[in-house]
Length: 376
Image (cartoon, rainbow, N blue to C red; front, side):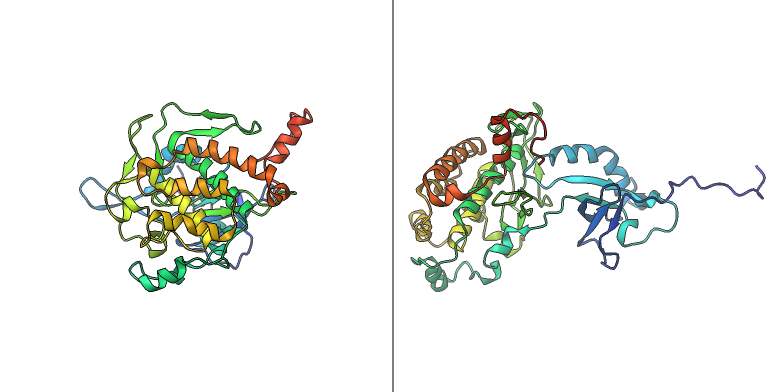
């Protein structure tokens, strides 16, 4: 080869699939930025892929990026696991370092993962800040918070049902690999006979996110996110799915630790996450997580303060029972929540006014319309 003849670059031409919505917004490892897909102008969130290198066999630090080792084999399985209408979905993985030209540390020119944009924020924004809760041993303050109070902070019952039905479906998928067939309400199918139970390890207000309503529905889509602590557990189709509790968790998360976890009497299990979801909705109904210093009967009595239906109070009461074996499974919970929610809609004024996101599917099915189903 003649060294005087320039060699053409083998890198891919720089044609990014995503660009920042705000080019001045700084992106780093600990944050996300809003991006726009260039093909259709749809908005998403982008997170930077950390540039971590793997160690060689001899323990020395090499030049191979961890992302180059993991993503080629893990990207598709991860996207399939997150492919559920009530789980924040991984939309794309972009390795812009393969593009021609210099690679910036910000904007579209860093390696990124692209996620759904839950543009209505998280449930934690609607609840009192966990920083306002007293220390666990502060009996006097907890006594004041847990006393009967008909003016305590309380969110609408329709929103409580919406979170319960949405996130119980997400747990049904993670725990058992079962989800509802899109376009056929009530048709639940197991999608993978080799499913290993997944424990997200944290079902608390900061993990539950909303989208803005896009039609006439009262509440937008509700989804579970935040898999930084998640564990794949047990044997294929096994009944046992347990993990050790997360140590040194932020205090805001510890308020939603179930009794067996904070007392360290049992491992974290599927049942623990049922309790966490129940405790989260309990906080929506009372303004506080279930107070540890009070017995179960006093805890559930506080749900009476807000005038919620007996159907909802009984379901949440069953979810926050003290012993893991006494709580419903995700399968039983989804079925019961659906049945009692339908009863609530048919027999209450507030329920009659709620427009559910799945009502469109039922309406089109009744009209014999087979195309243009609900997009989740």
